[in-house]
Image 1 (cartoon, rainbow, N blue to C red):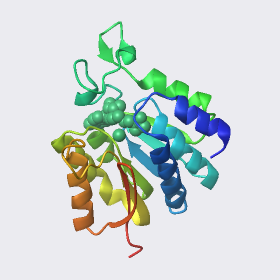
Image 2 (cartoon, rainbow, N blue to C red):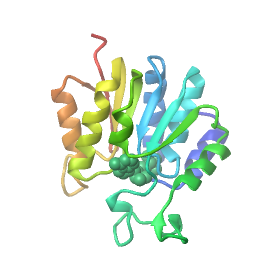
Image 3 (cartoon, helix red, strand yellow):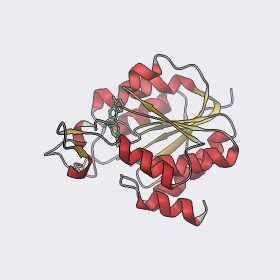
Image 4 (cartoon, rainbow, N blue to C red):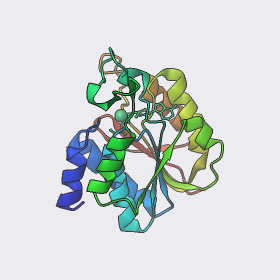
Length: 206
Ligand code: SAH
Ligand code: MG
């Protein structure tokens, strides 16, 4: 990634250390050779810059899906709450303006398509085979598994599945993403790389 894109990614609010972002970008490049990229969980656009940069390099796009109302763990009183992303008019979270600004500042509007909606609702309408699916939406057990079940089927042969916040040890974090990773392995995805809490798997070419 060039310096301007890296700076934009690092400046964005969000939940992704630099090394995991670089690994996500690499997975994005691999996936983009197969098809378009899709992430569940846009938040303020940090991961969208890492993946959007990969999509642009390969001449494809990233579709970034989020209702922009925050996960349970982003709400007021929870660990990952940022009061600055609350809409003062309603008192509800709204990360869409932040996402839009991040993508604009990164110069990636031509390569990142925002879809504002409930993940499973959007997935039910989806048809295009994906070169990479990045699962980073809600981390409650039922929500994370529902995202996997709704979207994983769309990963093309040879495509990548990336899962964020995978902690094998409950002392390090919630277990839902780890259970999704275990399920993906059971379903035939092949582990390809681990960087921090980011795990990348590959769907065999057939
Ligand atoms: N990838 C982001 C972080 C995502 S945080 C980064 O790089 O910083 C998780 C996001 O998932 C939140 O923005 C939340 O609104 C979204 N989310 C949670 N459950 C969702 C659902 N069921 N449908 C759509 N978006 C959801
Ligand atoms: Mg995450």
